[in-house]
Image (cartoon, rainbow, N blue to C red; front, side, top):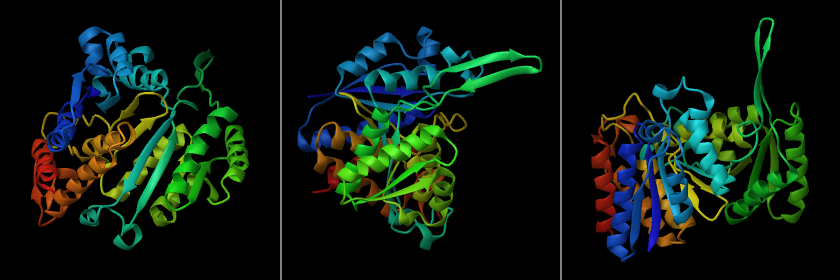
Length: 358
């Protein structure tokens, strides 16, 4: 039996997580596995219910589970709260830290059926398949933060800190991942300006000696942002630090047609966390317009990385492909000649395809 902690969170999180659960339950029915789901509060929903964004009960559940499936966190309702109560910084970041999740894997894959859904030219993006590996527990997001009063207002300070050990472990994962794919690794930094990036580049370069079969390229983050829309097919595996990775993966999602298609896995500790890369999308929450495919594909990553169920993970991914090939679309990826479906209907279509396939 596999124990899964389900944290729907805020906004569209409560709509998309049940669709991911449908896909996993279809795998359970087809292959005879037993998955046990336990739901808990996190983020703004937890703050409203029990007064804190990350309740001890939720953290305990996550640590005692085999994997965590997360929806989305945050929203304008809580944007003006003190820092220690804001859902994103006071729940998601501590959760990653507590679980030791130092690496975020975000596959950027363009399915043939969505070639026209992207705003980029077909010839530029056709065949794109990129794995972005983002360091998750260091850098600006976790460095010391402070404010000081001045004569004219305030000074705000965010500290960007990385150690050789932190850089080496994420870079090693990058090299190992590249070795299993096309043996090409692009390390992204800002070494022409930042001291932390100079240490990053030196550490990655030294580690490359252990991987002579992997082609290593260094690239400044501003150039990488440009190259992702100019010629994304030059990339296979990208490894970068926390802030750069956060920004670049949202940009890269447009290659796949929508942020609603971008799954992710946060790994490194005993219990991994899986979540779609999009946010809580409060503007469409409760309207059944949300695309659940990123959450469903995150569930596939859970089967692959936490449970070592590769065939079953592929079953979910192939079901998504077939649903898209049949022309079913949520509003964010809607195209001329396709059939518009809502969040629940898309989840049902994928589950049906899983059960139908032999």
